[in-house]
Length: 284
Ligand code: SAM
Image (cartoon, rainbow, N blue to C red):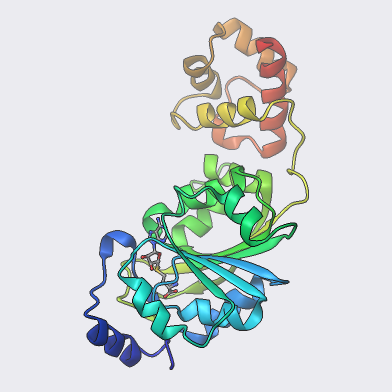
């Protein structure tokens, strides 16, 4: 059964009375070449976790490349479809649940004890950032995350300081990973086509975070504060988010080698690390 064929997708829809739910980001991939790109980029060595199998088009390819695939799908209407489409893939386990609500530490420990796994997915776009944030912030044993996301999101996650796409999520990804755009995917390669083009994004998880910080909470709070009001100076942004006077903040920023008149979006990750360390020293 060729799950990349729009005709097969239509037939399965008819057979199971399945209609796409836009609210669940159901845009199914129909390109064998892009599937191959995702599987190659995932560098699978043992286990793989997938988010949102849909009709199972990517799951099937992952199953051929992995020892074991665990795939999490929120839409229970898809369970009987997947039983049919993946009947021959006996190394696939489907879990019916919401990726954002699952206890992933428990899932990894039960399904992949003492292993580092790859994550591969054509993500539901309405929750791309929360999913990536959860996968990274929970410090799970993940080798790399290869995901289809909106093109704009992929560009944001790769953006350079001072560009319009650079933001808190860029820095979160840079802290934990080396991001790379694998390929751009036109909207016409999905059924139904989404409104925007997509990109396959690879996030290679670093052995340890890119910068050493004294306190991660303060590091991320500093970043969040810096981007809270883009038109304001960093000094004003920090002053609305930390309980220091402007004089104290000026002194802290200067001790980190950062001009108080700069805007948050001009700082690179090393500067954020320095600044947050200085803020942390004064908060203790
Ligand atoms: N993997 C299929 C493909 O490539 O054609 C389908 C991808 S489709 C873009 C996203 C899938 O994620 C859908 O099957 C949708 O039902 C599922 N999904 C949406 N929200 C989810 C959530 N919170 N947890 C798990 N799966 C979810």
